[in-house]
Length: 432
Figure 1 (tube, helix red, strand yellow):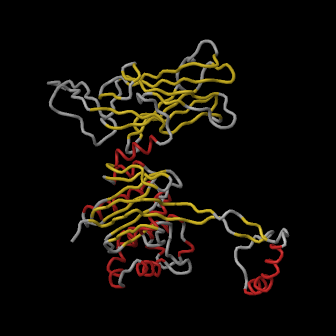
Figure 2: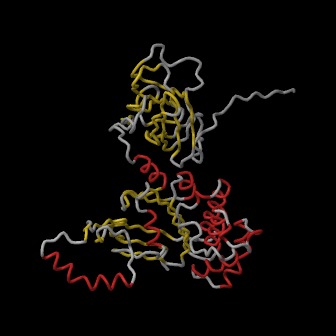
Figure 3: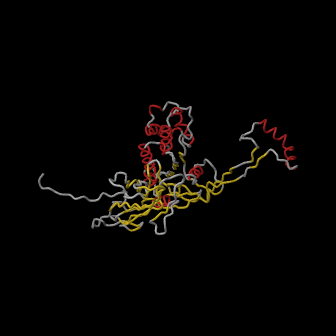
């Protein structure tokens, strides 16, 4: 038996936008009476058109758009594949094609095994039925036998934490209850492939952690394949080993998940050839103060390649419409897994940054030998005169931290965390 669970070959999905509309009409559907009247008047409309009349129809351009184009990839059995990309990149369309909800226009998708999909909260639930009835209904939709559903019913209800409300119609459920029950059905029923869209954003932090743990369990311990779409880079990084980066309906990068998430963060940035500086444009609308560029410094010199223990600095060049003596600057450094590693701002500094007000200037923040682990990192910045009017850029500056034997031993710091605890000085006393 092949070890490939999912294979997509040159998938494409085309949608048609625009149509021929009746002038002055805003109705998408016609009644039988309208259809008969249109048929009776068709010859007269044709004569008016031949005679050069203005007619009663208004033609709007009949356009098409490719939501997916030339998408190819493979997923092995037991693998968790992460799919990332901006809104409108084609991620949800891809999952709908893989779930057999919609047919591809071109190409083919092979699915080896039964599929459980969770694309929208409560998909397949009937609002008038109870939670109990919907578990059996949703399981049947997923292709499960009643005996399979009954065997897992208690675990599904316990995971969803809806025991008290299992015999209540789900129309009375909150969105969180809907999500917990829908995820539990998809996760506990005996499908070989689990397809999950960005639905975990609805749940609270503890439930998201619970869902991620369950997906890890079904993959590692039960050999099930997971196709996971999320904007949460921390979740993607902790759960997946490989990933796809999508843009405008195509896969523009595939590989190890850290490389994929790093490429995702680089989208839209204008980092220079050396990789240490990003030039920025003023934000749209009225902004009193804005950043022109941001630079990463290694030991005081522009450089996007650091090693563990190097002095890390961030430099911001800015402009202001009116003279300013103390622009507010803050930044957040994240790992490629989406974990917050360093956050700081100058709000609590005892003195202003500039003695004399200026309309342009440079701010340098020296973080010292910051204990970042080896890996890829990104920095977000915000600059303002007051918090209500700020220039904010997200994950715009990227840099790498390489390994270094900082302790002078054969031991290298682990890569499992974003930040490293530096060794402290220990004194051993012979008496208390």
